[in-house]
Length: 487
Length: 90
Image 1 (cartoon, rainbow over the protein chains, first blue to last red):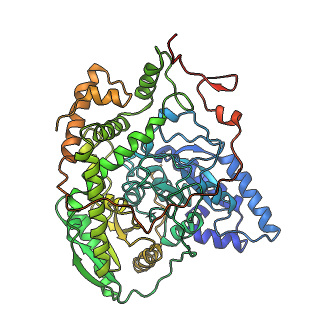
Image 2: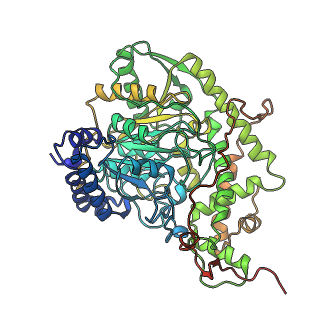
Image 3: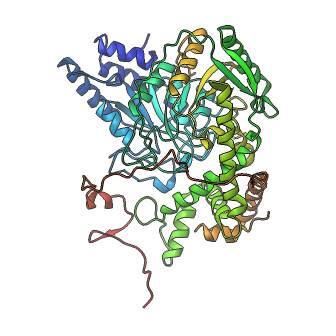
């Protein structure tokens, strides 16, 4: 067995017991990258030299007997919208093609202080806007399970790299499903944490009231380990919540009495029959193990997508106003005056999807339309939150499909933005209500593509999500294996 | 609701070429039609979350980024300043 095939927690234990070195593990990952990256195209930048130097440093620290974090020496990849000091951070956009941040995001500082070995920066939809990773300015990442399919988005590179064994763990960001949905398509585990539990400082802002950084791994325990390493209050993010965070575990062996809510709206029209079948079968397994399943209703779900696209685009239009060709990033070559420079820079620097969202956001915030769209969407957000609060009075967790389908073909939805937006139908409500949710693999469809099950909890109940997800994972054969990529 | 692409593009500081306008018009109209479906919610009012007071950090001097490091990313720099086209007419 190659080292890159281990889970992150298995590797962490081997490193601690000196069964292998961080340098060996890192080399194994880069050998794998060499082998499959040409097919998968998950990385925008590979930082091999720095990674090997860091791995050597970790091995030396360990040899001296220093107390180290469980993630010390574990190779981790980072989505390219998270600022890494001295390493290109492009958001997969021409607009930031040359941007080298002079500072680290808080999550990067946290991981560096725990001796992370960073393998590189991972591909995504431009500015995290998209559901297929096809909106990247630089390259199209493929799904390791089927190279003619998309990996999901927007954190497609983060998910594909972990699934293909090109890294042990990765960080993504999730504004409307951008961690869970690619985790589902690539057959791995992804967590969207409670809003405010992970600092957003240094995450290039898309929709600030919805964005949240979170981990990917090939098993629930890996995700719990990385989440433990990044969560917590940060003075540099005023929305980060002051709260006591435990070290999270994922070894639950008893779910008797657990109350599971199944919202009928997530199993209706628009959700693929095979996906419904796989998720329902997974829930039956949990029921057999002693969980109590009850049908519930979250009636506002059907209109959540509208509210989501209004709120997220409104915030994006103001967040992306900073890209003006003055302080950093792309500037157009020739222009006639300041306004012309702004307009040309932005028109040449942003891709079509980013332009559509900026224009939608500008439209819904413009004079005469504000009440009809933005204010209404904010009220609707409250309604969705109240519905979840009410639901959690009668159940401990809610289970739904993560995505309405499995990975679709590259190019299949690019020409129809509204069709692409519908991919987020099962995930956006969670961001709107600020809740945590995890996606775990629950079988495959008839084409051999992975199906994801979404487990949603009340705010700050990540431990419960890890408990249920790890219990289910153990029932169904344990951690996901590295996907065989035909080369 | 109909959307005036030229006006919205101008407000967004974007330039859409004449040949791209029909495509953007069509896409944006279908997106606006989608978000138009939001039902009435006049039974609710917006209020701040009393349980979520934002805590501001102490106003103390801390480490910062050097000007030279900050300017490294700028498209055009002169004498330690960002260079922009002339803004004020004589």
